[in-house]
Length: 173
Image 1 (cartoon, rainbow, N blue to C red):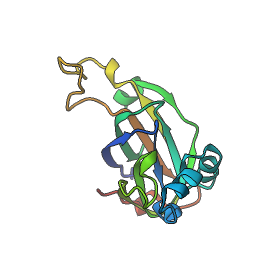
Image 2 (cartoon, rainbow, N blue to C red; image 1 turned 90 degrees about the horizontal axis):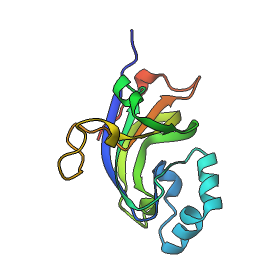
Image 3 (cartoon, one colour; image 1 turned 180 degrees about the vertical axis):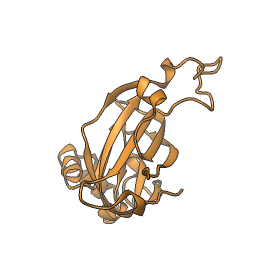
Image 4 (cartoon, rainbow, N blue to C red; image 1 turned 120 degrees about the vertical axis):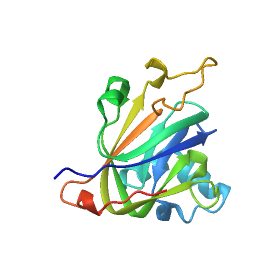
């Protein structure tokens, strides 16, 4: 029996130069601009959240709008042809859902994060940056992505070895 594949695709925006996936409960106390600056925009604080398994960065290197696909399961052959770079695995701990958006969306202070159901457990996450523009037919005559274009980021999610079985996962959104 093969493992099921779950997938959710979203458009994320950032004016802070970084997007991410995070554990919303971990950042519940971020209710003011001062707390956001101390706990999210500060590089040392953000690194601590990454190490704790509460935040996975998608460093886009600038402001913009990006298509992100979160998938339990690996890259397909088409996507694999256009991968520019893949991250080392990150730990992500879910308490039942994860949030995704721009760095400025982290915490209730911002209020703009999109939450996705993800079964309680520990996950290994690999972020793949996709060169979707390199695929023939991916852009229309004005340089915009077509409906069939690959995403900017494919985020591969898998249960951490020895933790949640893949059949216990459910992504919805």
